[in-house]
Amino acid sequence: MEGDDLLESSGIAIIRGITGEKGVIVVRAMGKEELTDEELAERTNLKVNIVRSILYKLHDHGLATYRRERDKKTGWYIYYWRLTIDRLKDVILQRKRLVIKNLKERLEYELGSKFFFCPCNGKRYTYEEALEHNFSCPDCSGVMLEIDNSRIIEALKSQIEKLEKELSSEENQ
Image (cartoon, rainbow, N blue to C red; front, top):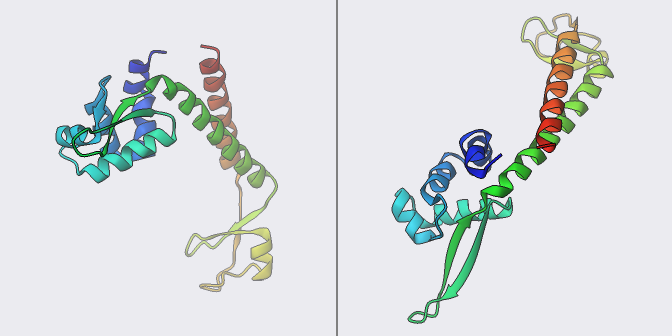
């Protein structure tokens, strides 16, 4: 998958997740050019400190690099930034692995526990919490009912399977 294709598809969602909506604006303004943070601030009408914050977040995730040169007049460093969108595929795969891991942990939790809820306020309690309150809601004293979490379990299994197939397919590209 090319960097441009990634940027248009799930890449934007990843960038938005890392940097927020303003980060998407900055990334689109950069394109394939090497620009200073001041130039980006001008192009995007964002404050320089916001642009810098976004660039540092992208850099922390390996999605931007910079080079610095000393300004001969002022002695200050000027930072020239460039996107490394080719790393985006790795970031997407890494995030999918993390989501799969979290879903598997949640699945284990759902499989290994019984849950109860209060029909009045909908609050969910583990078996241990319900037992501690004698299966009576601590808020309204209503009787707690057992939850059939089989739908949640099936949804988790389905989502894990789907993501694992996607991950396997993407890793083999």
